[in-house]
Image (cartoon, rainbow, N blue to C red):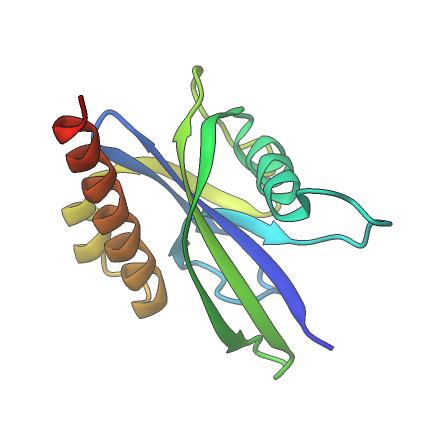
Length: 150
């Protein structure tokens, strides 16, 4: 068995919503990341990854997700305990409103960061940097496609 985790690269006004993890009993305490969490068991639930993403964004930062989910990439890694994790990253526009620490037991801080700020922050682990890079590439390619479409 393995854990399925969903992360959401929320983008607004040229910045990413980045959180600082705040649970000493879980993976990557103190590290910067996108909002996300584990898929919970459901009985034949459609769109389970997207529903998980919406739930986690609301639970952690109190925002609705605006627009469609765009698949960025997936990875296989392991928790500190060795348990395997499949992580799926989506790109979404952040809905209206100001994010807040809706789950302070899980999140110590949140901030809007440019791509450069997120990549250069000393508490951004390599896997989060890779997620930021990939989300930024997809965002740029989508914007380019919109510019050339008629």
